Amino acid sequence: MKCLINLIVPLCIGGGVFASCANLEQVETTDLDQETVFTDSAYTAGFLSQIYVDLGYDVSNNRYRTVFMGWATEHGGLQTACDEAAYKVNSAITMDVMFATGTVNPVSALEDDVWKKAYTNIRRVNQFFANVDKCPISDSEKKQYKAEARFLRAWYYAMLLRHYGGVPLIGDNVYAVEDAFNGTMKTSRDTYADCVDYIISECELAAQDLPDTFSGNDNGRATRGACLGLISRVRLYAASPLYNGSDFGTDTDFPKEVIGYPDYDKERWKAAVDAARDVIMMNKFSIYIRHKDQDGNDAPGWGFHAIFHTNDYYKNTDGADGVTYSNGAYCEGLLECRAGGSSNTREALFGPPTCGGNGNGGYIYYDLAKLFPMIDGKDIDDPTSAYTYDPLNQATNRDRRFHYTVVYDGRKLFNAGDANHVVNTYDGAGATTDAFGAGTVTGYYVCKTMHSQLSGNYFVTTSQAFPVIRYAEILLNYAEAANEYYGPNYEETLGGQKVSPYEVLKLLRKRAAIEPGADGMYGLKPNMSQDEMREAIRLERRLELAFEGHRFFDVRRWMIADQTDNKVMHGCEVTRAEDGSKTWKEVAVRTHTFRKAMYFYPIPYKETVKSENLLQNPYYE
Image 1 (spheres, rainbow, N blue to C red):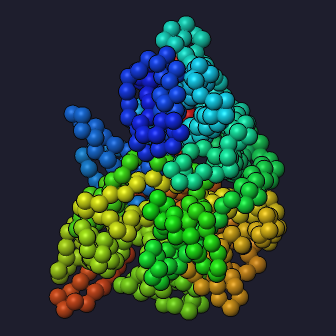
Image 2: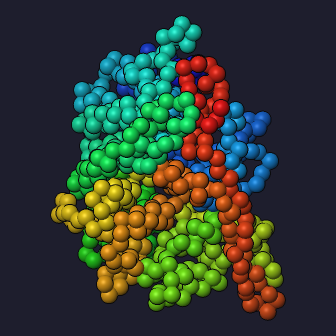
Image 3: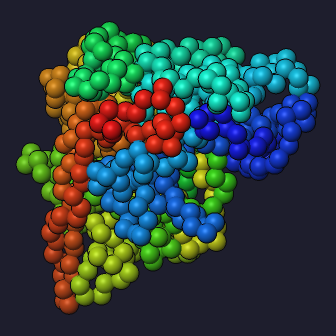
């Protein structure tokens, strides 16, 4: 198993501020021997920095790439592999297209994907542990570095776990070439339960020697908050239907315990509640609510935009209702991926053609766009709403997350220095290259995570950092687990704040500038049943966490992907007449196909063929 022993990957060091391992954006690869790296403090710190580089690989919006003659072409990510966005048609067949069309299989699965990247970094951690004591650094630095490395190893195992189920746990081993042939290398998969326990125990150990949070240039490094946040995510997944005693794979000879717990246990939901509680009780994180932009102008919901550009907005400390955020938009981040340097990659990936966009990040479906409620919190087709949905002016009186997620017809978007550039997605009279059928296949583009003062054809760039665990996720984890274990009306006080499934949803809707209403419910139905609350939480996750890599895995752990990803997806076609009037219609765009096997990723065939002990996931053989 070449990916486990990592034969072809040289020792790597990180550039930038080696001594503190702080600048995680600037990374260079250099061939150095092991002795040189671990007898020099700067190289040792740089080696640790290198392990951070793939931290956000699996949820990156340009995860899937093709390489031809040494030239890499970026495509989409998990957003185009599920029901969030339509993939851009091209001559290359990438993994997102295979998931959308139901054609993914072990042979076509990318070798250089999560399996290889995760084990490459796990091996790097093991190399680090085997050699770091040789390094001439202080005991305190060494303790922190070891804790960071331990967390990173847990992180990459968690990445493997939610893709494949149980995987081989290799401990602290650093395998040599001969181990691949003499039978000493471990290639059998451990149980799902053992992997969960290992990840959690590693995080708990790491948390003991890490600060609660970091700030400034140190953001992006492992912290106690990141450790507890990862435990919360892993606990939530472990309690979810796919893994918690489902019948998935039971009609095959595949050992059920490798991909989940054989029997259901409600107490796993309690463990998930407790894990989220641990983060909340730290009293270090909060939802960034700010309804003014960086210049102090009224901008409802602007805080939702700012959290994806913390490097630029950390100085905006004044929020709403007299609340002050000492670290600005960083207040919501538990862990950030800082690889990627400074560029306008996101703007090019998602933006419309007139703004230098290439569409490779995909085009948001109308099926998602229409789910953002009106500003009274009611659905767009709810007759009791105080507002009328206008499909020709879609952002009017809407949840402001719509405006900061979707590029719709008539949306103003920054373009090469022009802050008032209008994106026209209509076809017909006066159509531009941004039009339906010309630039977009759905009538929409994506603007979530895009900077409001950048475009793909502009020379100014900014940090490409993005959050991989944020406090909104933790609160939604709490809401979901509490509803499943205690019920929808459960409420408690944690760290001086009232917390409940209802309170979580109301807080996120408040940040989205949804009106509280006379009843203070932000459009939520009072006295919901457990089933109704479950659906409300799932909707809120879909809107709040869109394009952050959650939806692909959420529909799988809930075991609803055979419904959500197995149907016709839609767009919104706006047509402009010669007199300037517009009409619209909902149109079928793509048919997604889902096969039962696709609840898990296939392990690449090139890996399973190397060892008969490495079992392929069910329904792929």
